[in-house]
Image (tube, rainbow, N blue to C red):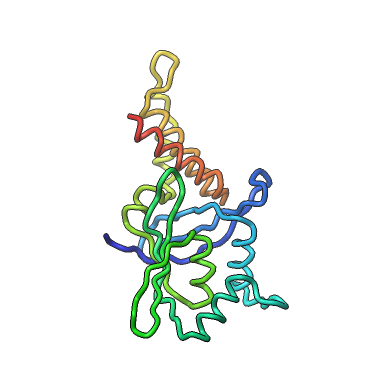
Length: 194
């Protein structure tokens, strides 16, 4: 399992998400971005730490950091290592008294913890290849929009995929990462069904 180091590009919201946010991770040594839909509370916990804003009372993730510090628990890294039914899974790799433990976590909680410990973030290469999105060159996008894939009034699978990829590129260009995540998932579903 090859790990790719990522960092947080930002958080994005949309009026259609009922309080959900897209957390955007990007490869440090690559061109892929990974949007993960997270809840408002987790988005706030991540954003506050990134902006170095201290709440008057500790949030849950701050409480975890305080307890971990009291018991000399160190968070070594966070890894997003599974994707099932469009749900991401993560592990918090921590160490106490020289003993390393892998703790199952939601990616949003794991990342909220990671920013408090300054722990590196990783995504497996397999997850990034499956769910990562890449902004294509403008010429490729325009070529994908040409009507060559149209057959008897219905779009062929290749044409549908090209159209969805074009929409995905537009969503990324417009920083609409929630829509980009939805389109990425639709492309994955079509590829699996073919």
